[in-house]
Image 1 (cartoon, one colour):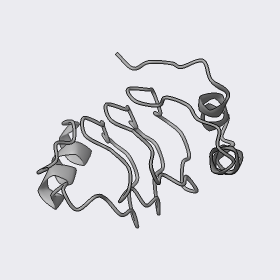
Image 2: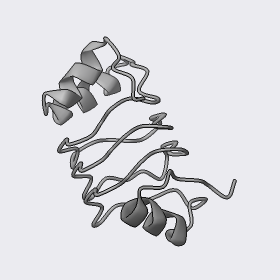
Image 3: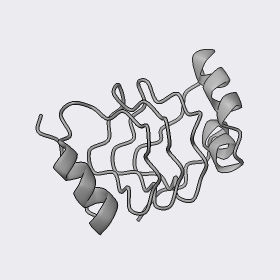
Length: 111
């Protein structure tokens, strides 16, 4: 079951304020996002560098263009998301991403 943290940064993402989320993170503010519900959100401008997104639910979110190369995604659910133009960590094979997108399996990495 996805968690709903009680922190201002998570609330910004849920409200569609991705640029403010990025700005506040860059200023040093933190929030535990592991295992959270990030479904049905427009996250196209998300700066995912250094984020721990393991076990997160992204179902039906718009992730187009997000660079996840420096994020942790093990166990995340990408069912029915839009991922055109995304970068993913090298340790996640393309076949694994295809399974996650088409069948709703959770992401497993080679590492």
